[in-house]
Amino acid sequence: MIEYTIIPLAYLMGSISSAIIVCKLMGLPDPRTQGSNNPGATNVLRIGGKKAAAITLFGDMLKGFIPVALVHLVSDSALIFALTAAAAFLGHLYPVFFSFKGGKGVATALGVQFGLHWQLGLAVAAIWLFMAKGLKISSLAALVSMALAPAIIWYLWPAPELLVMQIFISVLLFWRHRNNIKNLISGNEGQIGPEQE
Image (cartoon, rainbow, N blue to C red; front, side, top):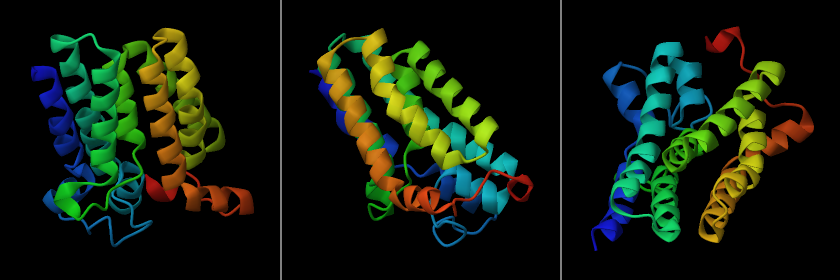
């Protein structure tokens, strides 16, 4: 069935590293060797500035959004949505094109959420922006927004498959941020500041 073919395609799309491609095209250092060594928008902001980071952020969101949005055209199965969303997210974390070493997944998770339900994406993005503006710590904003995402998705679309998927994504995202969590606890986590602008 056609809806099942979207799942492996979602993984392959998720495996496209926006950060690495953007940095290469813009003549910037490989984000895996600079800053936090993470191929994500925050590290690209650190090493390349706002324009490169914005393009990276958009690319990472898009690769989560597109496959999930396509499911709306071929299926209304919560299971297909859940598997497609998880596949796109796993592609970003463990990209087949880049030796299975990817980013932390915040932007791709947000793209997935917008693809599932625009109100879900908007709510999670609003929480992130509110936290980031107030505390100026990107990782903490991401962790809080993704911790609340399962409750939001259950309120908007109470399907067990989607709830399990979002919990899976949130847990993996916390795991990928384990060093950030240690830094937050010790008070050493970096802030979003002028040096990243």
